[in-house]
Image (cartoon, rainbow, N blue to C red; front, side, top):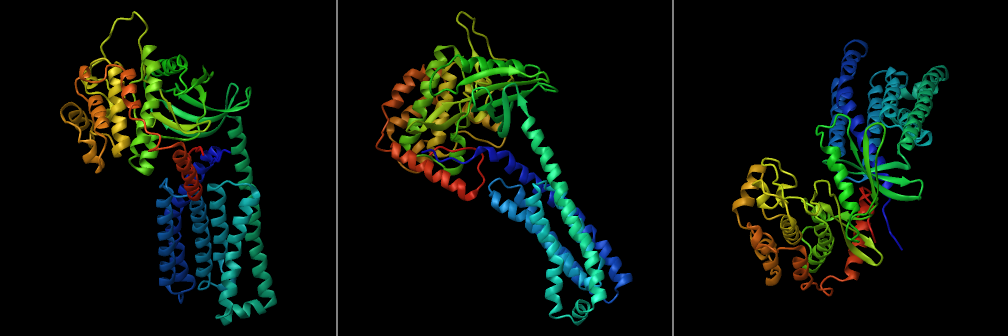
Length: 510
């Protein structure tokens, strides 16, 4: 049975975060701006009203808005909390406006119209189906009678108004306007939401309907899409060429599709299709992978058990053996480009992604030198010779595998810095901290030797082929140290954790 978190919620989740940011941004400026109205009312209309009352309520709500705005910027906050925080901002505002009305005319206060303003902002920044919008707006509309009803217990003047039929009829007639605002707002919110859904459904590239953005990289975006011909989920990588800063970007994009399509290893991402739309959007259709990349797993859980890390690298080697024999040098080996998914009963199945900067060397082509000063790849994972303008070859990818294995075992690459210059200097001159010292626990000596050999500054001192590295790594494989049951349990717990947070970015295997 496949236990999965629905990835199609990713776009909606991000939309809710943006809506919350818009709402709170408006509140950051609009809410204190209405203090001028408070000042006017207290100075000229109700001079006996306590000004401190309004200052206090404005400051408290402003603090709520600032807190919620900062919450909207955090990716680790669950969608349940995001939705609750969004409604809290509007509800607290409605309650405070109703509380202000107590000192400014009571039941017949003009501040009743402030509820309509809050409803208008709610509808503008949070488009929603009418039933959802009406539910939220009805709660805002009820804030006024609830506050006034509670105040009637302590205020003789409000009780008198409630017992005065003509006065109560006037208040009710004015309150009908607030209720009408809720109804019109809900319908308007629904119309905007419906229009957004139509645009959303209309996003198509040929036979592919784009459904949710699930990633973004240096060369474009990755979307979850539906293949209407074969009726299956696919991942679509997009490159928009209109206004592209690099004229060579489409050529590299095509090279990525061509390079990956030449490979058939089960540990390499499968390419289904490649094309371009009339409006200048290149796309690659590839298999959709539920799971997470090793970079995300490192960030969430830290260093991995030795047998698990070794198994991941062994699988990556299988992909690169085929790639190198086909004349393809990946040039960007790093945890973020090794994706862990499920294949049958194997819950820790690795796929090599992103051949966007791969170097394809057809048979018989003369060796060319990389242009000095052009850095292609991720500096922390690049072989030292590449910073000197040397060509990338199989040994450069072996260096990337060594850095990746080091990161899986210790939590980060061996050479880091606050600037590109510091990273390059470390790559060229420093020696890596021993695994055992960085990991703070013993590491098998043979494994330490393998990693250090991969990280040699001189390419001739490294493993000379990935096949040789794969043989050395496979000799360390230990299914008892990290079993299939361990992997299954890990992903089950991972999915449960995502479900509790309700902030998934992609599907996870279990």
